Length: 342
Ligand code: NAI
Image (cartoon, rainbow, N blue to C red; front, side, top):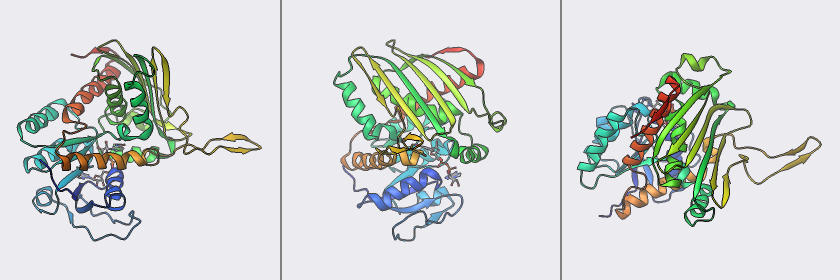
């Protein structure tokens, strides 16, 4: 079945809602944002181009029944994803939903059953790293055997110190699920994507924090994990919220015949500045900057898959499997125990 899909409704207009709205309004000529659901009205002054006035709804049912859109992009806080997804799928909307798909397994299993039981239901998860040109290039190299068989994957995901206040505000207002659900889920999804394997064991720890607010919020400033996949591949995660030099997302893929590194120095661009102080390579300072292209490409992929009647490239099952691992990591860290997954 093919759809025309140009009118998109946005759910939640915070950091990600603004990124996806900007993509749809300014970067995709055939798409537009035609309705917004948000508890509070947010000025659209973050858009740089002229734009039409977009109707705001503060009632989700009214928004869904407005007939103003063909598909929905959910960017609300994570604890609302499953309920909002479920209501949208029940009304036949194709849905793009930000990560993580939910915060507990039962709510995701309920949504999965609903999606599996609904003919033509379409749900795609926002895992933008899969659409980053460097990660896609690396995936091509891995898939064509350029580094032999994968044996180990090392991952760093560390938010910049300059966004610490933003994160603390976010964590005060909403349950992020903890560092493995909120941040590690990206690395977990990437490892599953690169290896096409699921995880068998996780062992995680919290590392010392220099910011006391974290423990009162039940959040972690830095955490690490040692993970094993079912076929024996090993992986490590280093997750943090306080990188002084910028937004540091790095992946190292070690194979029997070579090594691939993505983002080992998180450069902003190809510029090096040579001065009396030495050589400076400016770094990316935010996820929106580092993954600017990926955020556009994932929304393009969503629209294309719905229009062409293709299967979702990142399914509810992907979301569920990654969530199970992230929850196990979170539990392992809290209990100080190695956890075996089924
Ligand atoms: P944010 O705190 O910047 O914005 C959340 C917005 O949702 C706020 O404007 C708030 O008013 C609104 N909101 C509150 N309750 C709502 C409800 N019931 N329904 C709809 N909107 C509601 O949060 P941010 O950073 O935009 O995160 C939103 C989602 O995006 C989260 O699930 C988060 O995990 C995900 N995210 C994904 C990233 C990625 O790289 N893919 C990066 C950052 C966040």
